[in-house]
Length: 384
Image (cartoon, rainbow, N blue to C red; front, side, top):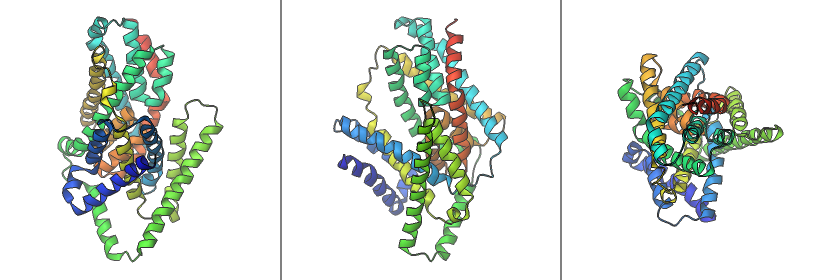
């Protein structure tokens, strides 16, 4: 357990420090390097079940801590409620469109594998729950439509593979894709941050220990916010409390971000970004492609890949039509496909922390409707 914890926290720190010394690492992206390290370690046979349990627990904790740490320094005045709703509806339609289309594309292969229309419709329903409401909606939708256990395992396993690849795709190509398709030649937010950092460097007279103290206070505030959100979720008679925790955590972080003493804290975003790096390493380490059966139900893997990447293509197309910001489009896609806790990672990749709040809001809207849509898709497709 101790070795696993040291691995999860020291390796990202080494990569971050190395990036400061060798700019090529920053260009490649520390996240890509950490994913490669994690996938390598996770698939060479040295990671046992106890280590995977540690990775799961650490990833659950650090991803929650990263949300308030990165939100406390955000400017929430740049995105309107109307924009969030428009992006959400575009993302929702894109996911539903590719899921329904994929059902008819792969139904023949499903029949050849021994699945009837109803069972394959159950797979589609489960996927709808995942990609509109996140993993927390996967289990209730699967139970509601009576998805067989072996199919539940296949969908969850293939989802882990595809969404991991999707994360790597966004980390590596997300920013160049936005710049190319949306003609963002200058990263204004990143430039402004660089200018701010230059000014800070010139006028910052704080000692090393004062800087450490500011970051420690930021972590302390984040811990208190996570504890408050978790405590509230325990008081509510809700089986799935993930949405409650994220809603409470986001709301409290947003309210505190307007408080002057919190605004004076420096480095909270950097600490939150470090926790995102730890999270990426932990998730990558847990992925073991050798545990999955790729033969009989390989068409489900293709179906999931079509749904995930196809929804992104549709979202980009509609974003161009409706003049939606490219950064918001990627943040919305990740929030729906991988769930809201992954939004800070995209914000870090894009160097645009102002997409965190609307991105999380879009994912939370998905949580609210995911169960209904999953069951509705099953009722619709099983009739064919």
